Length: 99
Image (cartoon, rainbow, N blue to C red; front, side, top):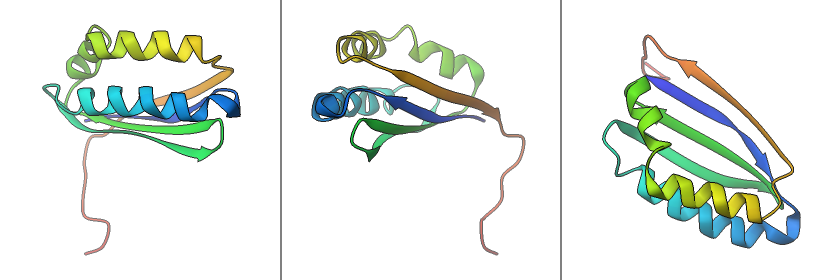
């Protein structure tokens, strides 16, 4: 499993427009083959956290070629992205948090 997590920043006055674009790409990405989870949430005005889970590297990479991701990138560019920090993790095992 591949997990991607990080943050992206835009000017605070663009937070609402960013959330519209984020909702669109999140909904579309969750329908892609190999997607386990995909979410973007506002941490503070202008700062957003993202979290994605993919079954395979190939599934994760395929999202970049999907039209919704291109539309999201264009929107973020127009909204004045001022920073992004993201990490990719390869998970080799999983277990319940409690139990």
